[in-house]
Length: 235
Image 1 (cartoon, rainbow, N blue to C red):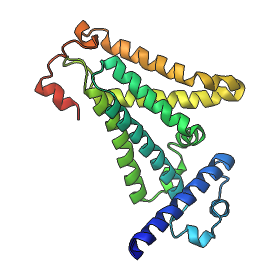
Image 2 (cartoon, rainbow, N blue to C red):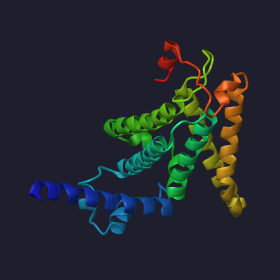
Image 3 (tube, rainbow, N blue to C red):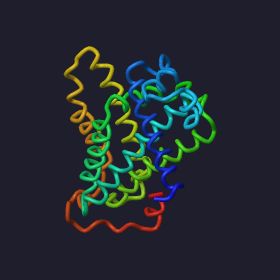
Image 4 (cartoon, rainbow, N blue to C red):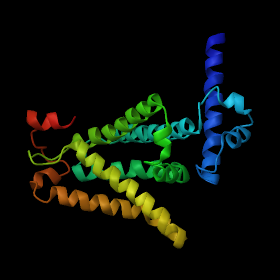
């Protein structure tokens, strides 16, 4: 291993060390009550060293958000690789599973990140960091849309895959946030998040398929031919 490669690995290791410390501090203290000094102390580094890797607290938080989206991308890629011919309903169910797995990977950080959407964090972030976050978000939504589009029912009036993906994402973020609020009152409620989310997506699926031909719901039936207009809607 050359000197340059060793330095690069050490830089990445230290960066991950800081992010792990920041995640712990944010989840324990909340965003507003967390400081760079707190995070540096948790990472066993000086404040000056931390600033070599991240410009401010906002950049740290958004980097954690991007890491969360990257994990979702990985789960969606796994679903794509593992699942072959599926019906539209089965693909939505696989998406549910991937998102729930992402939540269960780190429920505290997932909930905290969603709670901070639209907050002052985004207003204070640099244009470069915000641009990276937007690209990561688009990749996540499009990975869901591309997976759904593989067996989407026919019909010119059927919603675009990207619109369905955004609807599922909205349901997912909503149920996570509602679940957090209710869990404060009823601690056992959190155990039902999976079932409630799948029930919501199930209702969405039934509504979308209500006027579609039965063949679109058959597992191994001949898939309806997609015309050029339908294929164009995938992107």
